[in-house]
Image (tube, rainbow, N blue to C red; front, top):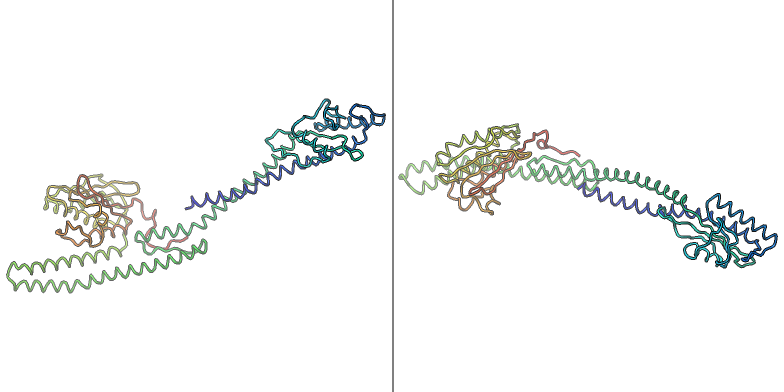
Length: 481
């Protein structure tokens, strides 16, 4: 969840910073250009004041006083150009007429473009206040024009044509400062987002760990609702209350099954004894008494299995570093006599030594139940193979038989309590053996899976972890945030 939430927060914060940064960058560029424009307006106004009293006309006719002022204007424009590198000129209304003064010499206004537009605005009596924005990547020039007014009429126009290199450099420098600030703000935002997501999701991770522990049998796992948002702390408290209720109900169920199984053993034993006494008074081979005796023994077996199931679900696993291959080979040797009696082949194949973490007693009992089932359903002349292998972080014990196997629907139900296939009702059993096996394995972090065996039969896979309790959540207990 963190990998999905964190990028979303980063994208949102980046969008906010960009939404603030772009207008700020535009404002910096506009401010720099406005400063240049205001400076050029002041310059053109000063030149217009000098040109206002020049009496020389477009043809060059003027008096002595007019010639002196014209010389002064031309000298000012030349010094201005030499000092700042800005082209400047005073042009008559007739654009084709020679200019009143210009610097550098022979500079003429173009007929089109920004200079022509500024000239036309000045002829209308308006100064240039809003020339188009020049951006740092543009190599344009900035044109500003002011009218020369004499006796209420515009007689000429002062035009300045400025290079924009320095202005664009200052704008770019301002943008770099903004970019550095945006980058620093983004780093702070990412750090805040990481802390925020960690603060929000830490209770969720702890809750997920506790849920996994309970699902694997560690019913005493709880969540310490000490950090995180109030909603998640309230969820943690509700989860603990739910876990307490579920643990209490399951404990009552286990206690009931164990007590009922234990309390029924004595009456059933007495009943079986009375059946045996009654059988002594009946003739040998009496069918009804034989049937009653068989049902009594079956009921006793079911009660024993129920008691074993209750104990398996209640007891904690004694995990140890165990040689799984040696244990599997030992259990195969223990069942060889039963296999030979049924004329079924039984053998262990695989490495001589594979270590894993398991409760040896529980794993032996689970393997006994699986091998017993395999021998029961494997016909004479067929073969049962037990093997062991490593599979990543687990050790797998595989029991493959040559029996009739199970259909897909039956595979989905195998291991359920009291479930038996309708095709196998004539084979002895209570339907609790695989349920006990699953409970024994789950207590130690193991699993059991079923799949068809090729070309026929059933393949049962028992897995136990290769990592020790120090690398897992060891036993039941509260999970702290």
